[in-house]
Image (cartoon, rainbow, N blue to C red; front, side):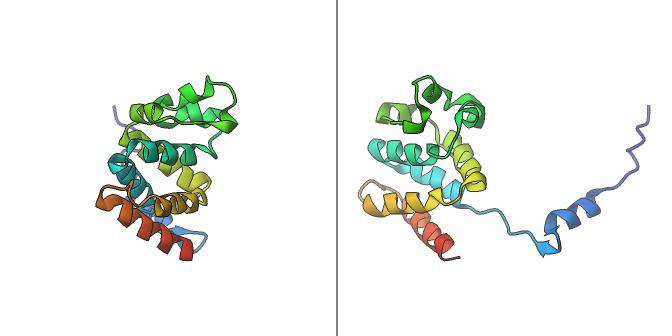
Length: 146
């Protein structure tokens, strides 16, 4: 059985609209969420908890249960989600992939949070064991100047 849309070739049209929004070229997606996830992967346990706490600040109750297949929903059960205290044990349960999903959400909803992450990383250079943290800090500083 043939579908009426089988012969429709939308790829060129989709490509054109994805490259422009209201006549303006669309900026390529930032690599900041990937760098945040990499920094999280290589950070010490206390710094991981602080990074997670910082990214969870702008997230509402619905986001807590939706982002990363509900990985952050447990925080909602603790009572007041507005005053989250993330322990190193909590951070140990969250994978870098889940952190990547959270960072992507925050980038779209409240990218100013990344300025707080830059400050946090600048204050904890010893906590950043890998190159990812340094790269993230440089990327966030460049992003802030834009």
